[in-house]
Image 1: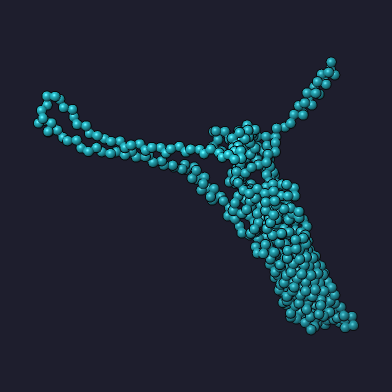
Image 2: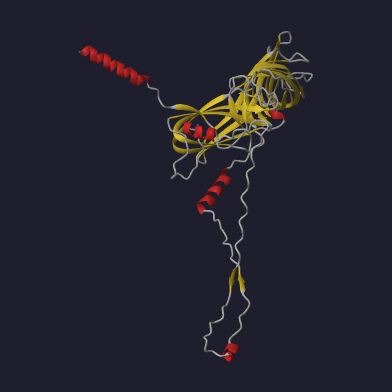
Length: 446
């Protein structure tokens, strides 16, 4: 008997576990009608958002909204930059700076000239009640955004109740509503026949004007003709026209305040997205013209500001580094060394290659702060100093490099040819202390 009860209980438990959960993932339909795009690679669809034209969405929570974002551009750029902003009930709940690689195989069916990026997925938790979302984009000129939306919820997303003042658009129509729409569909006429024309109702006839007529008083039979002459004669009838009532539509004060708040809350589209970059480099520097010391180690910090020109390929910046030359001449019993702190103002241009790696060129001007010393090694300390002092020199350089994006920044390799002008003090014949520099580094973009 106990075994039978256990079997019955196990069967009931299995049936309960096999009942599906009524949560469903809905393909969200926004309330603002934007152009819908479809990729040919993975058949993913989305709504296109451009700057100044927002995408509005209305949901009933609670639930989880999944947003897949792609950036687009008409040029085949390797990196797409933009900023996504999401507002709910007029408050910004998410602001994300996007930097996405271009999709190598992606293309749009509707707009084949538009190049999409790889997607990035966000998840937004929707609280209870009716929630209004606004998705907007800020980016460079020619940049747009494609959003693919799905909503996981257990709440029915139909129109709100009659007591709710908001009229919701149903995300997924019910079966009954779908059957009604199919029944109301117009059946096309068979070939060779035309649809009967619908007669328009005749225009409403205007009502005749109301006439006010003054009737003469009724006379008794015994009244004489003289009395009749004294009676006033009847005047012409007056025509009285009915005036149509004027309909005056007054806007509620709450609606006016809400319209003003929405107008102020609209963000102005920005024409560009300037970014900062910080790079760390390390390598070697070798003299060229005269022997003032062997190849030595160098390091520098590179700070750049990416200009909103030429699709973000033009940048200016400053760089500060350090290296040291040292040389000992045994036959003359001399030793020379020079510590150099170069400060550079530079400009760069990155060429589009439509690959992972992109070449760039640059040029700049230099200021060298030097601390030098030259001594005789065979004399006492009081008589061995040839030179000991600080000087400031000037110079210029040319740069050629190659960089590619790895992780949050760019990995780069760079070669530089430079020349200095002036006397360093520690060496004779005023040699150039710049030389040829080869470095490798990593550049972070913010």
